[in-house]
Length: 304
Image (cartoon, rainbow, N blue to C red; front, side):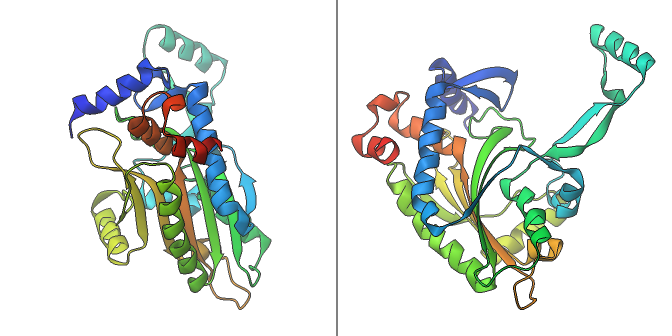
């Protein structure tokens, strides 16, 4: 990968004020103009998917630690997880903590895990909520989610943020309902992104599983074609970036959480995920840093 080319894009975004440096790779503030683009893309997603009648839910960027542990995320992605710790000492410990801070020493020894962790993907919060409701209806379930998510992978690539927003539609039901949903969005997603005038490609993909066992999981995921990604070239000198993801989980989450169809079978799930910041970055990359000068067709798709 051409690191200097990637930095050129990042520097350009910062110079124009679209991203605001915060002193940590992958952690940025966003300008009002950047946020407006994200908001308009959010509206575009709703125009394409809102007519299906999903139940809308919005969650904070943190989830129940017990639910997180049960989800199995640590089996596949321990390197990406983010936990929330807080001070658990006494007054003497507090004095030592302040002394360590003043002298540039490690002050985290008195930190203990809390009951929450940072949300790794928007849908992880949803599964225990649906499970608590009992068996699905004959129609299954369809949900519209958005959340800030965290993944610990600091990078100079502007597309690889540590905190980012993910919008998802998540489908629950029979295997046929799951695969039909994904097929529908594989087609929809390409049509929707074509309105934005950016170069796209769709390919079989896999999640970034950890370690040797993870490589086997990734190979199985690819072999079964459980995951597809819509790719857009954004970082100069690097491969294209996944901006939309189309996933069929089979019965993984249904089995984990005991979610069942009306006939007692384990429910299958599928989802389509939209990387909100990544799509905004793709638009700035391909149409320029001034949205007022973007092609008329693109502005019409976003601003009407």
